[in-house]
Image (cartoon, rainbow, N blue to C red; front, side):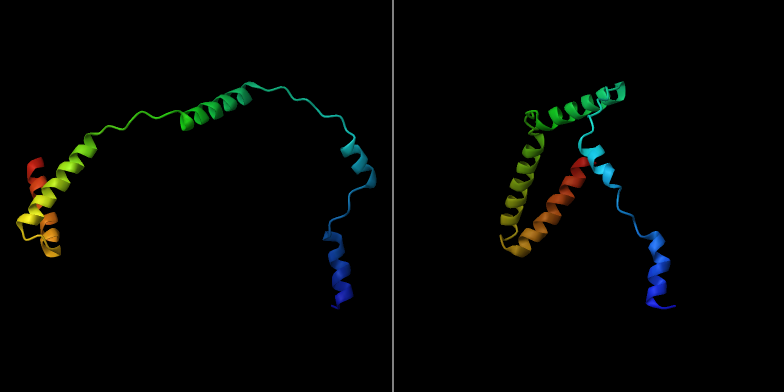
Amino acid sequence: MKDEQLEEALDRYRPRRPDSSLRSRVLFATPVSVPLRVVDWVLLGAVASLALAAFWPQQPVDRTLDHVAAVYRERLEHTTLALGGDLDARQLAVIVVNASAAEDEQ
């Protein structure tokens, strides 16, 4: 099959240009007004509530976790200094403080 025959066979699948009268019908058509239905109003309400929730000023977060973290850091620092204060002491202090915290939970 030669190139010309292939082009001829594929021509039927090539998209056609729109009719020239279609352009004027599209450009000068009167807009159609579609009334909103219940589903549309529900979706608009959902969008508004999500936008309100996203931008509403947030209340301060509970500071209990900050207090727990501060106590953990203080215990870790104290244990690190008691074990010598170097990097190895810090790594060992993490193990000791975590193990003692696990024992406190039980």
